[in-house]
Image (cartoon, rainbow, N blue to C red; front, side, top):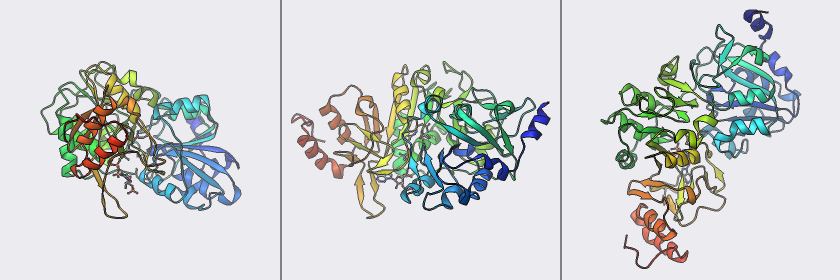
Length: 447
Ligand SMILES: CC(=O)SCCNC(=O)CCNC(=O)[C@H](O)C(C)(C)COP(=O)(O)OP(=O)(O)OC[C@H]1O[C@@H](n2cnc3c(N)ncnc32)[C@H](O)[C@@H]1OP(=O)(O)O
Ligand SMILES: CCCC(=O)O
C-alpha cells in the first residue's frame, strides 16, 4: 500500500472515529492548539451513549463541547495539566480538575504511568513523506501518541508546519484514523496591555540583560513587557530558549535583537515547545528556518537550558511570603494556572554561567470582589495556596520598588530584602510579622 492508499484507508468522518471510545475510557486531547475541535463536537454528540469518559487536556482556548453539554460530569470528566482563563472558569463551575505537574515531567508521566485509550490531536496536513507535523504543540505529543491504544488525527490546514527540531511529528503508520473537516480558524491570544507599573518592573530587569544573553519569557503581561522593551533597546545577538513561543519573540527577532548566534546549544535556532499568540505569529512560524520545536523534556530541562551562558529567565507570580516562597498558580484553594515550566526555568537560569532568574510581580493588586488594594507580599501564603517555587530555589524577586536577590541569604536577610520591595503601605505590618516569626534583626536598617 502506498502512502496515498494508506491515507484513504484511514480517512473517516469525525462521527465514525469517535465510535472507538467506550464508557470508562481515558481520552487525551493534548495541549493548546493541538486540542481537537471536530472530534470534540462528535464525542459530545455521543453523550447519551457514554458514561465516565475521562479526558485530559490543557490550556484550552475555546469552549469544550464535551464539558458544556454535561453540567453534572456524568458522561465526561475533564482534567487539565495547566489552566487557561477558560479552564479557570470551568474549575470555578466545578467542571475541571487540575493535574499537578512540573511540565518537563509530562512525557515521563505518559511513558511511565498513564493509561491512554484514545489520543485525539489536531495536526497539520500530511507531508509527501507521510508525516503529520505537530505544528504549534510539540510538548508531550509524541509521548502521548506512543502510549495511546488508538490515535486519531484531526487535520487543520490552518496550522503552520515547524521544520527541524525533535519529535516534531508522527508518521501515518503510527496512527489509526484521520479526520478532515472545515479547518477552523486558530484561536489567538492577543498581547496583554502593559501598565506603567509593568514598565517600571521591566526596566529593573532590562538593566540585568547584556548582549548575547539567551532569553526565556514566561506567561503573563510582565514578561512580555520586557520582550517589548528589548525590541526597542540597543541589545545585540540575543538567543531564544523558551517553553512557550509568544509574540514578543517575533517582535525581538524582527527588530534584529535575536540572532541565536552566540548560544552554546542549538546555535542559530530559536528553541520552543509550544506556541500561542496572534495570527501574525502563527504565520511567522510556518517553515521558519530560525525556529525549532522540541519536546518539553528537552526545552525545560534545567541542565540543558543552562548550557547557554547568560540565560535570563523572566516569569510572573501571584504572591510571595517573607520567607521567599512563591506561588504562581493559586490564590488560596483557587487554582489559577499551573506550575508549568516556572520552577525549571528558575533553576536553569541560576545554573547557567552568568545566568539570572527573575520572578516579577506588581507589589499590589486590586481585589475584584471588594475593590480593595492588597499586597502580593504576605506574611504567609494563604491557607491551601500551593508553593510553586520553594524558598531554597529563590533567586531574584522584582517589583516596581526594586530587586531582591535571595540566593544564599539567611531568613533575616530575605525578610529585609523582600519587605524592601513590598508596597510602602504594607511594610510596617510585614516587619511586625517578621518579628513575630523571629526573622527580623533589631539591627536591620529602617526600611
Ligand atoms: C511559559 C514559559 O515559557 S515557562 C514558565 C512560565 N510558567 C509559569 O510561570 C506558570 C505560572 N504562571 C502563570 O500562570 C502566570 O504567569 C500568572 C497566573 C502568575 C499571571 O498571569 P496573568 O495572565 O498575567 O494573570 P492575571 O493577572 O490575568 O491573573 C490571572 C487570574 O488570577 C487572579 N489573580 C491574580 N493575582 C491574584 C491574587 N493575588 N489573589 C487572587 N487572585 C489573583 C486574577 O484575578 C485572574 O483571575 P480571573 O481570570 O478570574 O480574573
Ligand atoms: C504549561 C504551560 C505554560 C506554563 O509553563 O506556564
